[in-house]
Length: 127
Image 1 (cartoon, helix red, strand yellow):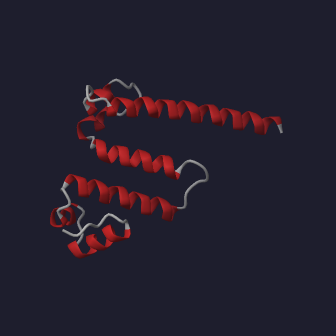
Image 2: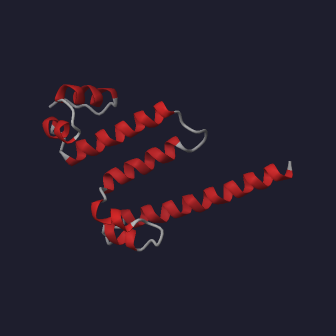
């Protein structure tokens, strides 16, 4: 029983450190005095190769989805797939200002299919 408690305690410590790290990282992204590149450069653990291509809205959405999906039990593959699709649709909608034609082209799908995906995700707002 003691080994189980040690494992749970170690896991809790890792979880707390991970959340503290994520909180610091997100604070830097939210700070207007930092550019996304500077926020990543200040962190020795972050992959610098993504610094030039960071879409802050999309990164934040992925982070929030990850916190929701992975707090508690492990999510099903279906839950992960639905969440991932919603984040990509959200990011496309933000990036292309809701223009269905541009979004469909960027996502390599038809406008009709895209509208259906958006409706299922609760992101469709007719013009």
